[in-house]
Length: 365
Image (cartoon, rainbow, N blue to C red):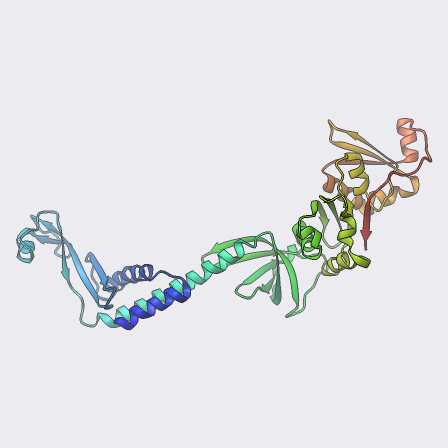
């Protein structure tokens, strides 16, 4: 070790952000193990690296005892006072025991420690960079796939997209660019592990934030998202500015904004509805594209009974109940859907032709 080594540590400190003092402390600790291993000793030793010159010295640390039982760990009071007459019982005496060829071992140990610390520091930087992106969208390149995961290159790290987090029938080609949602960032012994999803409702929300300037600027707010990935989604939006149409903003000119999102989600249908403070109006909007005649709210049960035209019943419920299920998720209310005929039979409600409730929503296929 010499001045070049100390200068190299200073360079690492500048480039990698790893404090030189921390590196030297780690090297000293590792050299103690190397010394004991290479020189077959159980002595209590200390390694010291001169911070200016890089010179390394090894010191055996011995406790001053009246009766010496282990010469590797203890020294008599008489012998200690031959070194320095001020030593007392139970003091620690340090005796230099630096081996003649210890420089080679020290250099090898230092290289291993520095390499390891640089690797740990780089992993730490990557972890810190991606923990800030948790619950956000990233774009990566598909590298490979096995029976459980697709591996996505994010530049500095390879992320994992479990097959269970992919949309039904979704397949990727090698080197294809893909957007995904970061659900979890973990710091493991092998480095940062980043878990992605293509099915999470957060992906839909972030895509709208990217595509709709009014949402990004905070003028339009996403109040709720309900999603059955790969099939259909509903998103409720509200405008803080009465002059800005939240639904129209999300659709965009000629539907370009929402169509970009539909294409990214491989044709997933999206219903954009206006969030309303009135539960009746909100539930009616959430059942888009079905038309609604009447909504009755039962606050105690947190349930809404909805009456739709007879010819709209199947559309309101949706295939396998999908439309009603998504509307319930979106609003947070249980929804009981009845046709006009069913309402008349069950509740004695007279059939009406007074028209449908006003609904503010749009469905994109």
